[in-house]
Image (cartoon, rainbow, N blue to C red; front, side):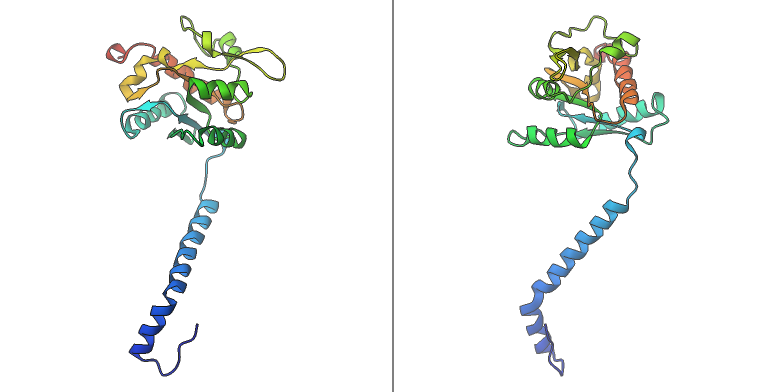
Length: 216
């Protein structure tokens, strides 16, 4: 790129006419570079100080009610956490399973809400936690809930694991625009914050076992 002297209005116009793409490329690279630096240097809460709810159920708004729900949970049951967040997942038919596999290997998310098919796929692959020890200890109260479809065979040991809870056991969540017929709540085995995720799930079970109309 060379600008001949003397500089005239015509030469400047010709220069930008033929070399505009160079400036556009520099601008794009500058923006990408800034985003990369911001992503790398931006503080992120460590796994043990955050609980993320990855939700792939039905939702009747843009997540405002769910955000408010988790803010309430943050204050009432998880005040020591830096972050308690709701992440809505759009399960594309072509890439949904690939996304779930990637997230599970990366340990992304803690509490998951998935359709029956995707829940069973992940649970049968050993990526969802066995909830039975928390039931046995009293941390989770599942009395009266039909758990028929929530057990899977752990691939390495052949044991039966309780890996999910039907979302329809918590109809009060409908008051927060969350509808999960034929969906299951489960905990990612590599999430990195098991006990606090169980606290959140237990809080939901305590507060939303009744239909929305009589929840309060």
